[in-house]
Length: 472
Ligand SMILES: Cc1cc2nc3c(=O)[nH]c(=O)nc-3n(C[C@H](O)[C@H](O)[C@H](O)COP(=O)(O)OP(=O)(O)OC[C@H]3O[C@@H](n4cnc5c(N)ncnc54)[C@H](O)[C@@H]3O)c2cc1C
Image (cartoon, protein in one colour):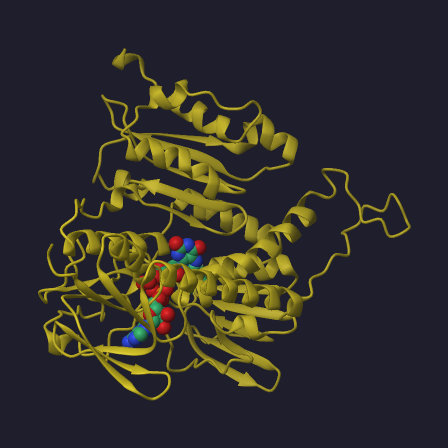
């Protein structure tokens, strides 16, 4: 039997902990060095907390949006009053739940890793050449770890604009919002990418008056344009102020207020400002370039499709690589790295089948090739778009916004992508994801039974619409 492979993982987020589990299963000796807590930013401050907050927002939206149409009222002793219901949230309770849930998940993951035989070190790791990690531990001691291979999965940190430095009270980044004990009266969200849109929608649902500042023409500039249009119109209908083509230059705190100075000279006043202007990779000062790991101008680690960096034996996964800022992609990159370094069967990363979701209301889920790729001629595909307003279940549930789109190759009819804009689109997209991954044709998708009535019926209907006589 050969010698056991020693693997050191720096960073214990999804990129790191999922890899550790796979490597331990394959018989490697694994050590994870993690600075802030196992689960990483995904579990402690980003993905898990935001989706837990959004769970409360979702209940609020469902109630506020449908109470009149579905005939529900708050029974406060005056039956029949169908005015806007007086339902509120206690943000202190919500945030306590968010933080407890995140902490519990981190503990669960740490226990799972220990059970799998992984060594966990709490501290900060840096490379000392491509085969050694030096860990500065929490207790002030230093440990030097020799490794046959190293995985860097150090994640990213919110970008800070020089004129808008968060103070943790009124000017906040997305990690600091869970410290709020009272709902912001007037929240200005700077940045209309996925994070900005999710928080703007959530706080609006919780009861804040929200202004969303977008430097681009519309919200969610990186997403399907039809989906972004639906979301922006829903946001506006619910009373959100959406400022397009407005660049925030500076944010100033004045007592209990914040003033956002826009590039065109306008100012916006609110009680709080949330900065959501992207993230920078955690790759500086940890010995990467000195050990032969090439960093791009953006600071991201350059990796190939099996997660190798330019230094032999050093791999990287997750947000520090800038490949696709999703927990699922980080985990996949990490697992691929382990399969490759341990000589197991490995398929290179395939981004064409990634499913992702924007957790707004409605949700926006996408998979496979995008509308932009089709419009630019990157791929030749037929498209169909079915509004949900025609779906019987949607009518019964009072759902008026949203659609499903399906894309297939001309000739073969193989499904290459799709978009779902609907409540819980994150669940509905799985059918598209399976079709893309398994190269199913639109006819195969159309022939599978769906429940009547169901929102997924619209996916089957879209597939049926793409059945073309010239292929028969
Ligand atoms: C608000 C928000 C919501 C999101 N929601 C979703 C979602 O719903 N679904 C989804 O798929 N993705 C979501 N994402 C993206 C997702 O959180 C990231 O893609 C994911 O966290 C990347 O995982 P990672 O392992 O690369 O890094 P991280 O999760 O950032 O973990 C890296 C860890 O490494 C530690 N570290 C850094 N440097 C060192 C060092 N030198 N030594 C030791 N430890 C170190 C960090 O402290 C951190 O704990 C969201 C992101 C944000 C900002």
